[in-house]
Image (cartoon, rainbow, N blue to C red):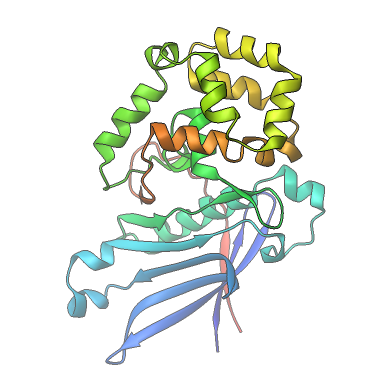
Length: 270
């Protein structure tokens, strides 16, 4: 007998398996799984209040999000490829799931996650989503959408972010240096596009006051299906050289002005 959580969002429906883990005949944790165990769309574990007696006070306050991945196979309702591309199942799923946790496990203070999300280029290559989002927006997706924070040299990371988005930092790097250090070391695909539009790219670089402004301007010139392979390597390398990005993040669940939207959910048993 298994428990299932049905989550409904604006555009999707998800069926999440819920398993109990016991110790000394007490349910000490719950494991949530969406999709296949070998490639889950979401896997999540939280500790129950009963675990507090066995494992101490602090452990129950932090839940762990192990995986979050955007796969069409994990959606219950039948949707077209165009529909799936238009509406982000990841964002809707995470918003709704966090709302469910807040409403049903109010003692949990934060969600811990280790980010390894990416944009697929093809069967073998990927683009690191954190690097891409920081390049364009000057912060991670988790910070932008959920006011997330890190406990891993977060102050230093914030200082590096502040420097990266500044006009002063941009003014210290010329187009020639940027091209030679990053574009030449990137993929031939990106290099050929930039070389074929060299004066335009150089002009965009020189009139942009900050690097996020430059990357956003270039991003608008590249059609969606080519973005990953175009930015792969050279954009990642530039961000890696500039900012040490934490990979462990914490999403606070109880804060004023939260951005998650509530929907309806129901629980079914099979």
